[in-house]
Amino acid sequence: MRGKRRIGCLLLALCLLFAQSGCGRMEESGGEEAGEEKKIQIGMSFDSFVIERWQRDRDVFVSVAKELGAEVNVQNANGVVEEQQKQIDYFIQKGMDVIVIIAIDPVSLRDSVKKAKAAGIRVISYDRLIDDVDIDLYISFDNEMVGEMMARALLIKQIDNVIMIGGSPTDNNVPMVEGAFKRLMSKHRVQILDAVHADNWRAEEAADYIYENPDKVAQADAIMCGNDDLATQAVRALSENRQAGEIYVVGQDADLAACQRIVEGTQVMTVYKPVEKLATRAAEAAVALANGGTLTGDDVTQMHSGSYRIPYIALEPVSVNLGNIDEVIIGSGFHLKEDVYLNVPNKMPK
Image 1 (tube, rainbow, N blue to C red):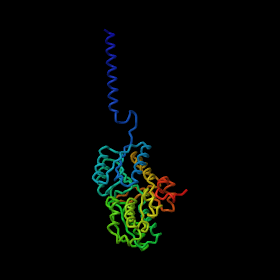
Image 2: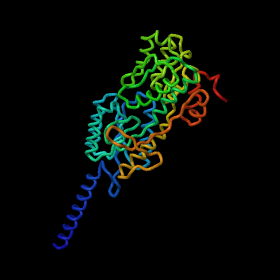
Image 3: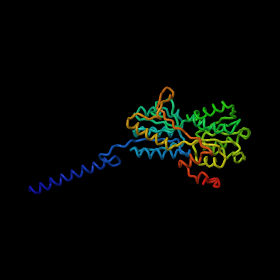
Image 4: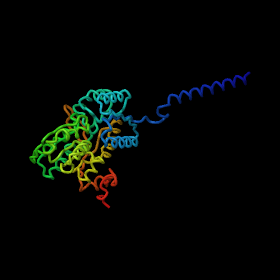
């Protein structure tokens, strides 16, 4: 009897042990393994991926954040403000440590940012400023410098008249770029024949403008396009009217199509933004903020945004033309030489 009791007690102890270990495994499933430190959670909401460069930004940011021990949940709002608001609400509910926003309409997102901040979540305004709200960082390229570079590229051509086809009127970067461009045009007495904007950066509106305003276009020496997507559509429309190459076109973002047009002679310049640097620096800042740290570095300054004073990092862009495209674009590996010179292989450097 004693032996049976001992065996019974032993079996009972083993059953209890297995039951406890089984429960432990269920609690850990889908989460961090026992003893593993909880990873930083970053939510990233993009306007859309229509603009070519955003996919580069995403890939670099996610890669760097992962190397720094963070997980990134990327969402695409497809240009719909209400969808971006829902995404930010979702990130708040999930208890993200940091939310990074590429804003569609900054004004419409102010309340969303305030809710995130009230929940103790740090917020980074990436590339596009969400103004007049207490964000933890605005990181972008120097947008006034972009406008100045566009202007100088056209002033070298000694133009008299220019048309401006700008980006989304809700994008806070647009007035920065255009303000600097207009100041230089005014200083050099270049007449701005017309200035229009493409809602939500819809590139086809640039082509529509060319088709619908033939008289104004005929008077223009140049067209300033808010980005290279707009320039692509503008040059296509100009080509149909046999004006491509005769009317100078500038853009920004160094899209492959724009670089191809530069070597072909139908676009004067583009502005190269080393997005790898921007995305890397933003990922580093996001992890630092998630860890409760303050942003440090020679590149961190302050700027006024409505009634707030916020941390600001502005990276320097590079003006790209036929004279330096091989060095800046191909030399940096941003685009391959074979791709840039695809349509004019006879001009390809050895």
